[in-house]
Image (cartoon, rainbow, N blue to C red; front, top):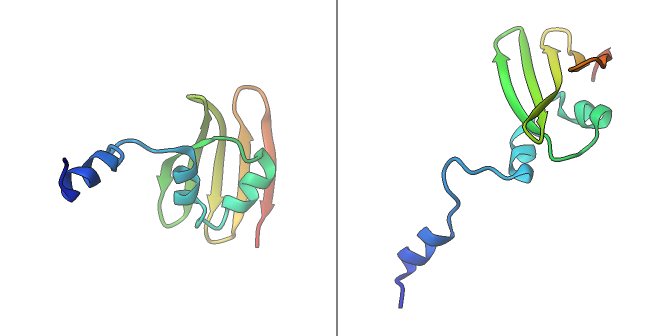
Length: 97
């Protein structure tokens, strides 16, 4: 028989383990997230922060370990640019609300 502490430990995910839904929850508070998903769809993308400073936030978005999109959010103007990597070019470039 296991103690309550042992049971909790067995049910906890590893520290470095992230599920796609957990990843989306982590990023969904960003002001540009809704528009990104509207433009690229709601697949099991993995978001990776490349840059986040006072001026810009740059995200790389992967699907199945392959880079698919790069987003640039200009904070002082709320301009969002989305670029499809590998030949797609810019697919979105507007000020978002």
